[in-house]
Image 1 (cartoon, helix red, strand yellow):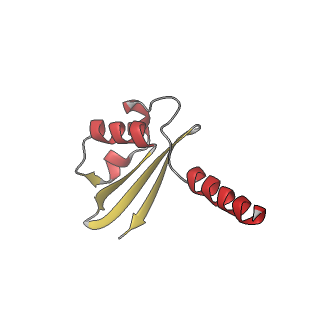
Image 2: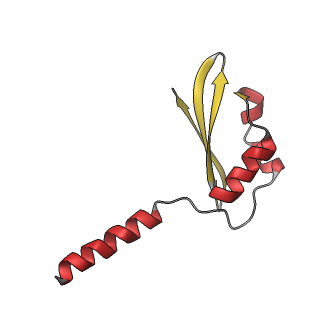
Image 3: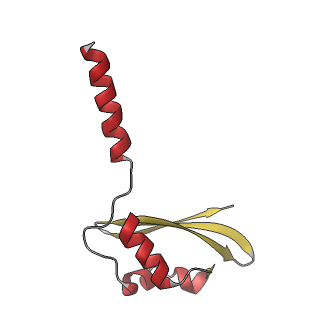
Length: 89
């Protein structure tokens, strides 16, 4: 019985740890522009809406295009700054 309870508690802790959290310090527009995503990719979402999502959720996934090829851009707000991952569709 105790082992089952311990397993359930561990699984709950792991599932909570995997969730995105809002950043401790709000991301600024300058930090977003420093990533260069608006220079290299065509993104429909405005920088203001991207900042709002990142500051609220801690991450955002954008629909974008790079040279007419569709891609996803995942932006994570970390304590060290923004981390950008580009994934082809």
